[in-house]
Image 1 (cartoon, rainbow, N blue to C red):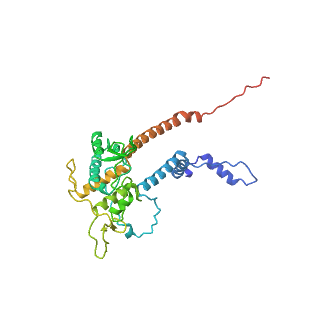
Image 2: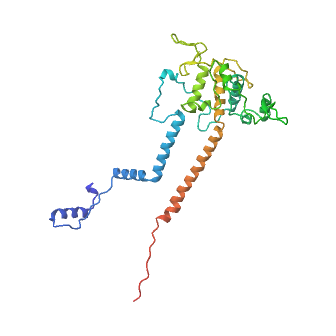
Image 3: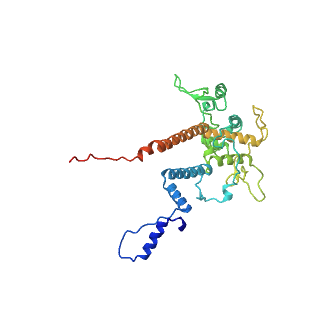
Length: 334
């Protein structure tokens, strides 16, 4: 370190040591050369004091927490408190690689069409889909003519007519899908007191986030099995380890070859479960594909604006902000 000092600086230090102290005076200061540690610390201080760096870190933290909460349904590092035991909550379903789970992935519309077929031929006997109209299927899984033909197969009560009486008419695109039961009491009476839930928002109806709920519904539909030894099942109940309490009133409804797909896809139990879960996911979030498309556009737009702002700050505004203006007043004439 001393080798870097100029010779004049060392002479000044020696002169100071030989001169007795006699009060305050101007003491020459010796400036040592900066080392790598000091330069790195100054760079770190500059980074932490930069507003852009703090804004970036804040956005990254908030985005990470939001992504985690959307994926798992809970905040990170904060556990959930439940009154039920893990056994009463049901077996935790495994994670399945859904084709539309990625940031840039969209729904498999062929799977949505097959899933609607499974819902119509199997699930619609007990479960309603109140929030989905016939027109919502147009351009997603069916054509306009196909949806019109399916809607006209159902009769809806309308009116009153000119005589003040209600009448039945074929369905239209604006009509919502019919419910299997006229009211809640009829639904309970037909299912031993249990009320089949509406499936419009079933993918978003449970805690754990949309991705976890899809895994749960798939595991529930394919998880029926014989109860283990010592587990008692009441009459009218069925054993399913993924359902809370392990006893569910809904019997197994999916079996190999139960439906015949139009496109020739083998109708296995897992295939039908996967297709109907994809359809229910679309029913709960019809704007899924459009939302991801708009999100990608927003990222491209704001990235471009950010790059432009950096360019303007660096090459346009910084020159104006850092310039020095001097004013020389006119000298008084003698």
